[in-house]
Length: 179
Image (cartoon, rainbow, N blue to C red; front, side):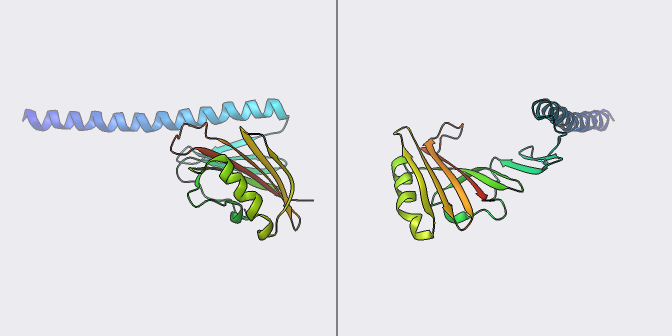
């Protein structure tokens, strides 16, 4: 008789622990969203509404001016309309993406070194119809400003300073349609 009773008590304790764990995660996520909303509102003066995805890595920020979506982590996808031809390496590991009504950005990691990535952009972009407006090769970091048919992009290339040390170089691309 004691075994079923002990088993039942243990089972109830496990269920309570799991419910408590998931409830506390949701409460902490909600509290974090509220804190971030207040911080952004204080800085911008705009009303902000933040909603995190179930994985905590997808965030949507809504203001009177529009909506911005951020995604980071292991399951990042390209924003709608983003010209994927701007990612010129085969081993790109997408780390972060954001989008709004005015444009989008992506950050990816690659094992290629900065110079190789920069040289690929400089040599390949004109063949893809992009005009190089400005290029900066500052050794420790590189930048390109490009345009094409009413679109503009800013590409920055630098060392990978993220927690993910699986790659040498980090590339950030900010893209928008010109007005």
